[in-house]
Length: 153
Image 1 (cartoon, rainbow, N blue to C red):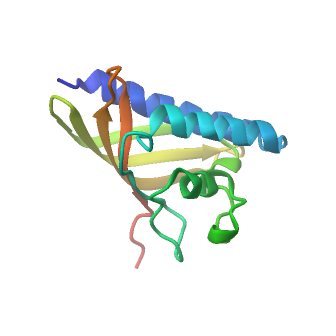
Image 2: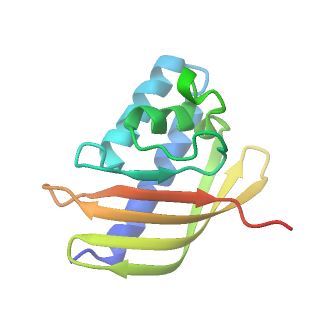
Image 3: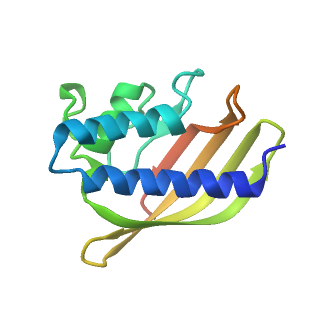
């Protein structure tokens, strides 16, 4: 059974990973390496399909490959020219507030808001749904990542 503590820890790892990418934004090679590590260690691209709908995209809204997810985080893919590199902000803090978490033996779903704090102290609220599955080593991997900005009339 996946535990709430495992989901909480996976979310903390994701936030720390995003922050570490932005901290490297002046060194493209190191930034790319860190982004690959985040995608390899936290996402399930090596296990099968990953449903990734990032926040700030309008043309290619769905990122079903590791390459297109990497582009969202750090830009640089000519097929996804709208990508400015969300992780390059840089962010200094990421805080998850889960509204609900569904736990199963090898699968978990979490939904809520996460908050990104920039270097000037500004905070951006984003809605999320993350799905997790366990890999063969018992580690949680993200296989569903949906983010969107709150509705604004």
